[in-house]
Length: 423
Image: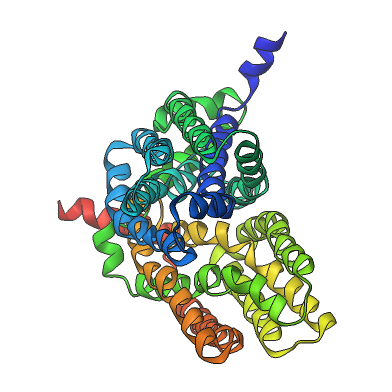
């Protein structure tokens, strides 16, 4: 009886699960579990925290490679790109037990970040858009909630293995998990339009089949997007919005403690923000289907701007908690909305290449935000002013997104017809 039941399951669901795990485990292992390895690595090699943390700055590699990974996924498909990306991440973990010099640590960290675009945002955008054309907002929210899943599960897994065996075995375990996931992705991921349509017809989703087919072919090319005013407005808006990750989130725990929270309470506050991310992703993903992803993003960033402003301007415990909950409400949804905004504005035709270019712009927030926060804290012993700068950046992003006018589906058809006529 089990086999017929499995046969009736819509194939998009296991595909979404694989993307959920790919996104969640990548982020959970590389970022959330990072701190679990800090003490054993410093004790064994005598590295400073600054030397260890410098590897985080190598995330710029993801931004630099994203356009090439995106274009490659548009040409040869996301399945081989995802497989190769997961193997890159796996190799970065599997090689870490061989570390003997600091540059080895940086080299293997670079391998992990090189695999990030093809293992996280690209497959999420490609697969959700293709397999769930009518419900992509809510499904995208569920898929990128994998980040929160990774944040909850990977640190305790790493801590348990380190305590029971060694930090080397923890990294080997991470590497093997990612290698196995790569093989699973190779077997499960399907992106052939005819197979998607056939599966939709088989499972009673024939009304979605023509939507999926049209969505996969509709949209702008990279060249057309670059010539479109909306591309630059949306890039500015999304770059501004992503200042929240390295400019606010990574500084919150220390800021809360400096504002009078006990260390355990400060940690709890950050955990609450992370936990709220799951509900926020689902809520904003669902809302994007009704009010558009662009408007949902403006609301998300507005919540964050208000929350950060409150956090930066008060030391009163109750008011701080109000700011925390307002910030957390908007913060989680951004992870889903970034992809949805790009799909909504430029379509799926060359989504990989366009999303890759967006990620290049996000190098500015990924590297600039922590430098600003660190420099201001060193000179003032507080993150207050750096948070206020981020609020100003948020407002700039809100204005840019408000000015953008995404291309509508019928306009994609006109552009495609013009291109065909010109050929």
